[in-house]
Length: 374
Image (cartoon, rainbow, N blue to C red):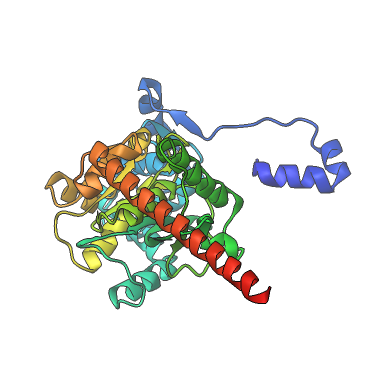
């Protein structure tokens, strides 16, 4: 049993590999949760306990192990049936348990300690945010600035953090300038996402007059390559806000990719992204109004820690599910989409007029220069 990537790699570089391993069978570790799975899962855990000589689990312990398997799948309708991580967690909980049985409390503690051994980078980033060295606004409103969400993957551990995305517009003809791409820090999927933003702008606003603008777009204080399109919805909102000068809420972070027509598409890392922004809000200023916007199609991927769930239940933290860019506009600006788009169109028309005036001045200057030489 091995990783598909390693199989393809060995197949490519070692001609004898295929001769040695003639039969290949692909195995999906994620299975749908149904009545049969619910009945069989406790039996599998019981077998592991017997083989590993681990203490028995009570009902709360079994529940936490099942929850962990669901979290590993990243989908509340599925579980991950690769058992290595579950066995490791049971072994650690077995050591921590002071009783004859393992309860949910020990499972939670084992998971917490497992994370604490590998989350040094996460803690360092949060410390820099708390100290104000990494600037993240979690209150108020600003034009042309939004909180996107990124995920760091470190081997078997991943975590989310907010990323400050800013946009600036001015008269010109260069279109959207992706600063990360200009300095070779933008991956191909991210660059594609930015090009889709241009397509949306032309499709939505160019029917009455041609679009003429220059717009710079960047992830502030990002010192590593940017890849993926999961921030494209946030980037578009930042651009529209910069054009219209309408401020957007900084206490709500956004994740989701968009297509050319403004439909919000599902993305990965939902759990990590929500919890990452939640913990930053807790570190800085927790107002009870903060939250995260996620694609509606990611609803089954919202699997959160008990602390986050408790604050959501008590109305102290909020999850908004959206289907289109217009849904996001209404949440972040308080404007009805129709009114907001009118303001964007006004801003674009003004930029077009300023660009034409600039062109006239340049042409006039060139003519004057030629006459002077003549």
